Length: 228
Image 1 (spheres, rainbow, N blue to C red):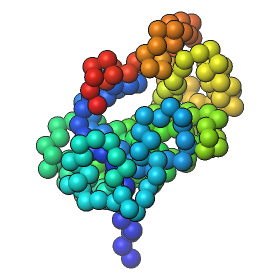
Image 2: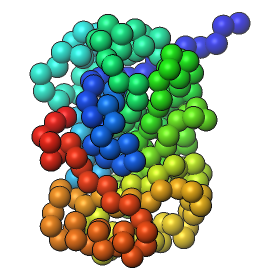
Image 3: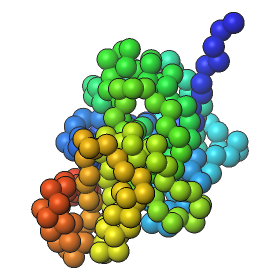
């Protein structure tokens, strides 16, 4: 009996430079999946929240969107690999984002892409069980007390290679401290603070905290460069 092939709802697929976290500056293929119930009020990709059959399109239309939209295409891992080659993508680092990509079983995607020489990274809220390959770099940006009511999972925090936490005020650091006590990560997990919207006070707070605790600062390089 043949295994069931997984289909992934792809909202966007493009090549750029990773602008955040440990791989800042790395050429990357961004694979944005459709669907997210977490409901972060400040989310800049709210068009990915709902996965409606009415918005399903073919791969060509998804690739050629002129502006963000809820349109998505259903693609297998093999079809995605073929699209990478057709588009002439040169990057070997693939960032799986969303939406909330951990809603989906990504193990087949990892098997296919890693078998073709790609490295995978997932960016997740930490609120869903992670179904990724052993080699996938896991970036958890924990979403706390969001309207969707989902809790950050201890197993996601333990699997995290880096925890990237947006901050604007001291209360955001305090909330992270409570989370780290409830869901302790591994000793080798990188903890990075990311100032929200490059605000000066948020940046000063993040820098001071990172120095005091030997954490890392994550700036959104792509926003400074004005690239996607």
